[in-house]
Image (cartoon, helix red, strand yellow):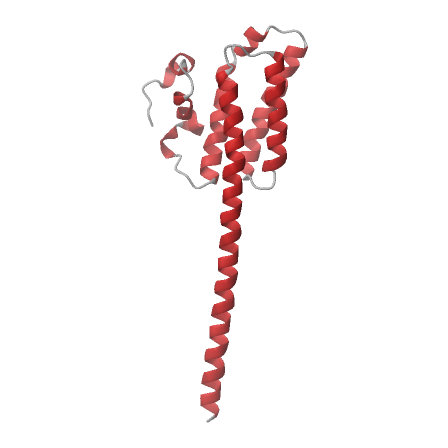
Length: 170
């Protein structure tokens, strides 16, 4: 009789552990899914900012640059809680580059001469998108070093900016 109670108690105990373990797992999975949805939304905001920057590449003015910087600050506030450290670092690199460009504009440098460095800016954008895709679990293998090939669909002058990689499709 003692073995029967033990078997019954042990079975109930292991079932309870399994039930609560599964409940915790499902709860954690829901939180991860919500975080991923939030990251997707926040990363989409960044993508909008990036596309606007590329759209105005020909006629970048101080006013447009200031608008992009302000939108980036707003984006920065939202993504701090959800982005991976790689995304945070990539965006930090972009922001520092943007601050340097703004400082050069404030010192009176011609916007056209600054815009000649757009290839560096675009590489910083592509690295961020690369890191975001990786953070979301999307494939990045065929996007080139730090996602350089992402730029092909945005830039009409991609091959003139990056001639050394015109045949490297890996």
